[in-house]
Each structure stands twice: as C-alpha cells, then as structure tokens.
Length: 406
Image (cartoon, rainbow, N blue to C red; front, side, top):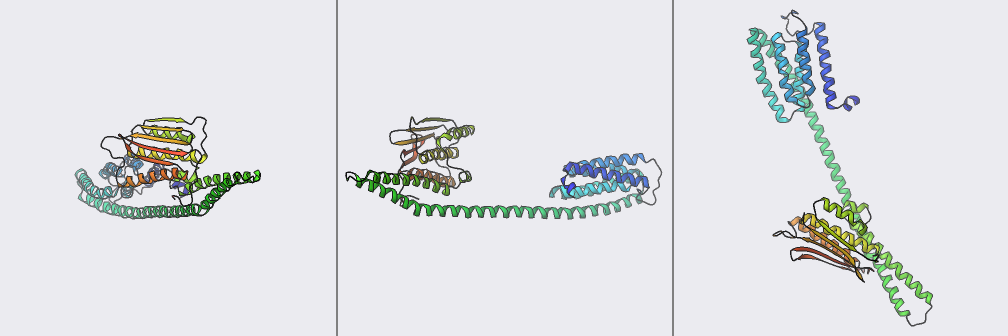
C-alpha cells in the first residue's frame, strides 16, 4: 500500500491499464471471455485483442480526463458488441465508469450517468442494426445495467469516503490554524503585559536613578567634594541612561506586532539601501539623501530613525503606490532629522477606507511613540500636494519618564 501511494497518478494509471490488459488476455486464452451461452468461439482471436488493447489504452487518462475517457471507451465497447460481447471489454469499461464517478467533478459525475444511459441506448441500437438479434440486444442491456449499476454504486461509495476524508482534513487544518492563532494571540498578550510591566516598574526606577544621580552631580559643584564621588555619580548616570535606552528597545520589541520584527533585532540606517531597493522593485520611484557627517547616532536613535522611514515607506506603498518618494536623513548639532515626502495624486485622500484609516493611525502613532521615547518629535500630514513626515530625534536621546506615553 505504501509503494502504491508513492506512485504518481500517471504511474498508477499505467499499472491499472497494464493489469486490465493482461487479465483480459488471460481470460481470452482460457476461453472464459464469452458473456452469452449461445456464443461460440468461432472467429479469430486477434480482433478481440486489438479491441482490448484499445480499451486498455483509454485507461491511461482515467484520472486526468475521466469523462473523456468514459466517452472514448464507448468506441471499443461498441466494437466488442458488434462481434458479440465479451467479459474483458465490459470489465475495462466498468473501471472507466468508476473513474468518472470518483475523479470527475460532482456535475461531471451527474452528467456521466445521463450520458452513459443515452449512449448505451445508442450502442444497443447499433448492435441491433448490425446483428438484427433482439435477444442479443436485450441481454446486452441487462448486462449493461448490472455492470454499470455495480460500478456506479462502488464509485459513489468510494467518492463519499474520499469527500469525507477531505472534509476531515480541511477541518483539521482549520482547527490547527485556529489553535495557532489562539497561541499567537496568547503570546502577544503576554508580550504586551511584559512590556507594560517593564515600562511601569523597571523603566520608572531607571528614570528615577538617572534623574537623582544627575541632581546629585549638580549639588557637588563648588562643594569641594572628593572628585571620585563625582566620577561614581557620573558613571551611575551614564549607565542608568544607557540601560534605559536598552529597556526602551526591549519594550519596543515586545510591543511589536509583525512577525518579522518579533524575531529580529531592530533595523538600523545601514539597512536603508535594502529598504529602498525593495520599494523600487515594487515600482516606487525613491530618492535618498543621507548625510550624517562625522555624527554617530546612539543605537536607539539609529534604530528609531530606520523604523520611522520603514513605516513611512510602507504607508506610501499602501496609500499612494507608484508615487515619488523623497527620503532625507541628516544630522545637525543636536538632532538627527528624518524627512519623508511623497506626492499625492489629485483627488486621492491621504488615507483610504475605514480599515486603512485605522492602520494608518496606528502607523503614525507608532512613529510618534518612537520619537517621543527618545525625547524627540514627529509631525505628519498633507502639505502643498504632498504628504510629509518630519521627525527630529535628539542625538543624545533623552529617556522618557515613567509617566510618559506607553
């Protein structure tokens, strides 16, 4: 059974066709092929073998074109009837009927029954016209009803089991998908809960440490205190601010919804060429200018700048596909400035449809939160026939306090 299942559909049909042909040859050689007692063995055997070969060859397309195969099978069947019906040909044709019921569509299956009844009556008329024997025609019709009835019943039974199995597999896939979605939703909820806890508790304490250490440093000025104390407080301040930045990054990872961002670290401006290349391949004309000079932005600032550009480009793909996009990233004395501009087609609103509006607001909210988390600002909106996104991120990121946006 395993080897049979491993064969392709074409290979199975070849095996079936060859098996029926060999079985038919054995019946002819053994003399068990005649269907009526009145028939004799008179006449050469080779015409029967030719008809059997023709009928067996039709079996080669029983899966790919079951209805066509059944109709073509009427040719050797009629030829066999004209010489006197023999068992091998009828057995082959019952397999063609079975295949039409099992492998055809439901409409084809219903049409096959009607077509077979019509063509069987025609074939019986041909037999009567050639032989003039009403008895032979009547027996042929009775045998046809018996053979066809059995084939139809067996085919319908197998088809019913097959459809039931397919339905069960589809139901199992649907249940698996629902379970996976439920699992993912539970994971997302847990990630968001962890992000809230990190923000409300740990980030708050880190912010307090940073502020208090900075205040302590201020009180030491002019007091003549041990310089080592100032160094320790400065180290505490620096480490707490850096830890807070990393905490913000971790919170951002935990809050992120898209699968790609859940499994990879945040992108940086060094990955901007790849983003631009993907946008250009999607048919979007993109111009980019990046001028940081000697400035090396902090990791959190670099990451936020890239994500803002990524979100803005994604929004253009959704709401203004094919429109020109200008990306400008440069650094001044205090901040990293990110500007994304895209043209708007006449009469086209910046946001399309209710669902798109929700997604757009969410994207803008994400960008604003990224900027605010670093002490920066972000403005977005239409202006002079274009949509602008302008972000200003402090090069020395100012940590958001515990009571800030979440």
